[in-house]
Length: 69
Image (cartoon, rainbow, N blue to C red; front, side, top):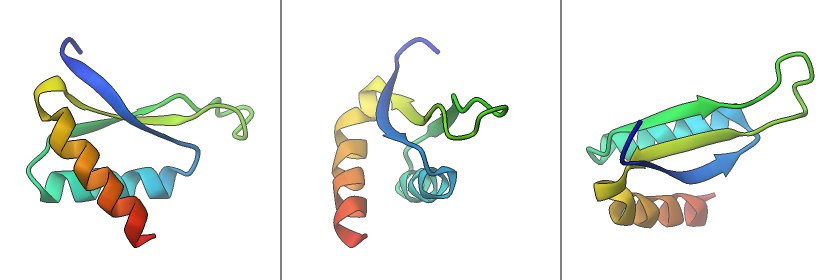
């Protein structure tokens, strides 16, 4: 995953999926990296990664997403 950067970290899988959807609606390719320990679900986080070239636009969309919450 060269040239991919983490732009968002979240414990709530549903919230991460909603944000990923919002990024893809704006033509930003993104992936979810699940680092939750499934034996102990309270441990770990979910990361959203985008290509480095799309980082600036993705951060704007994330900020708008947080305001709408």
